[in-house]
Image 1 (cartoon, rainbow, N blue to C red):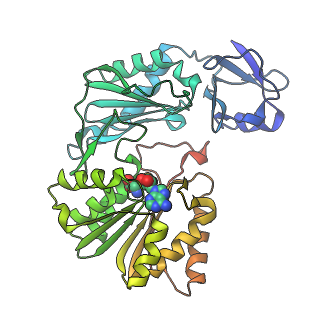
Image 2: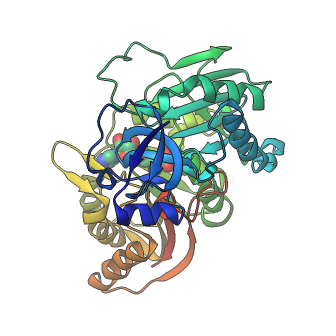
Length: 393
Ligand code: SAH
């Protein structure tokens, strides 16, 4: 196995259990191929860990084992997937929830790859060309651990230079019929595993949707911004919201959101779906004097529209201030972000500042991070990217 030495500060990190090999950890890499198994060593050549080389946005590879005697072979992959499956037993048993994550990258011991379960179908997401070279091993392990699977799909979430535009992401087994209707805490969700990067649902918000449906929606007017397929709106409507308004700038959102209401037997005509820039909707609603009892903010970490560039790290405070303007007295704002550029402490700082600058007081009602199936490791805290805060204005 090829050895690559890490600069001292990075070697110290890895020695403490940090599984990611940062770009700056090595001064030069020559003749290494994507997916090559590597022994990471310190500057004196002492063993730190074994893993693979694979360039992704976060680094150039991962440590898969800190045990010099453990082999990275087929049984390694089987054991990691088996272990991961064990901690999802409660979800496999829950007939009301048929979509969840069964393998969460470094949190389950293999950085760079995740696997989601959608009612018997499995979706593998590959985050580097390197980890994609381990496809045969991961697939064999998946088939071994879940022999009753219906079909397997994949997303190559690395630059393939447009090579797979025609691809429907199907790997093997039975082909699904889409939309596939899965359940989450009893709510129906229409998903597509064969239609671009996103499936229709962000599985990491399961507990948040349940909270909204069961405890925050009854009799309330709800504004769901950056609504995508309207999953939060549907949860609110099922929870008895008097009316939901979903706002998303993408044209597809109208059809996608209508579909999610329909598969739950909710009359779409009683709901508002607006294809519009959120940053136009806020002043528009404010001018009309509209307010909402529950305002949901779940922007992407980074987005560019024709007029606007939004970065969660830079602009979240401003977004909150706009939301505060149209939140009813004692109303609730659900502030969510999936940005790994800042942590919960800083996020709460944005909240504090936004309310202060708006001359209003607030109370934090509850907070969420990733659900248990999006397993994280304390050795890689950045992996716990989700932050959701329920705020009463
Ligand atoms: N909250 C959603 C997920 C949001 S994904 C859910 O729970 O499923 C981010 C969405 O933001 C995308 O659908 C994208 O079209 C939308 N978006 C990005 N910039 C926007 C803007 N300026 N105005 C409205 N929508 C925007």
